[in-house]
Length: 304
Image 1 (cartoon, rainbow, N blue to C red):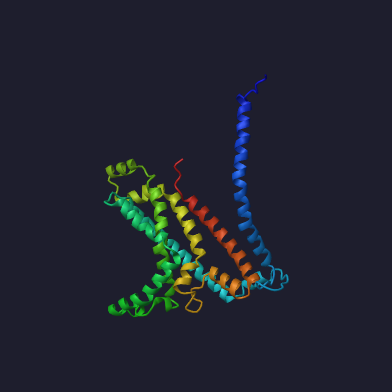
Image 2: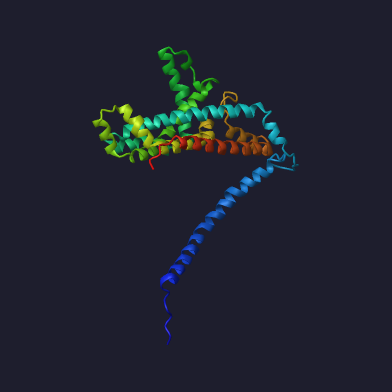
């Protein structure tokens, strides 16, 4: 009776490679199908409707580039872009400065270090809407009491009802909740800095500030880039916190681009028009993210 021979040498490696490849495809194909069905198809459908006057129901006609032209003549759209950029840039700066400062403190040799790290991460696991409604109550009721007690006129009423100050309340609440995630990334970066560098710098008499500017920040510059890009991209898509805090008001002073798209597209019968707005905003976010990464990566320290 003949006995089947087992593959050996190159033939065995080839068989193993084919088996691994089939397994890889069986794992990737379902995920790829889900991505196409749930992401690519809706995105292409939205782009298609951006060239129509579709209201979200009923009949529609092709209008070409008319929706895109009208976007640049719409004061409400332009105002929402202005507010969103102001909010996103300010929040990105505040979050990264605050997160880096807290990460440096939490990375120092202090008691209850692990407990403090857990406490500082709590805001990140809370619902954005719940945090927003809680701070809405505090800023509308408690803060004015403090303002009256201290005799500060601009704090005597809710800043969320002031068209000039409402955005600051949104930035503050957003920063309070978002700093936690950035702290985690900065802490991961700080763990990669060799302690020997600080010991050598101390022997040479370098101050703490000099150690930060010459060792710490250059060594974690890649983590700084990641945090800046993620923060700006996330804040440009702000929606939940604004709904909970101001609802876009007073008037439309804190209406973000995402909120305008939602209200006009799903509640205002402007589905095709707001799809054009969505496409433009998608391009803006992608371009800004690429420019931000390219600029910051050039400033990263090269240790190769």
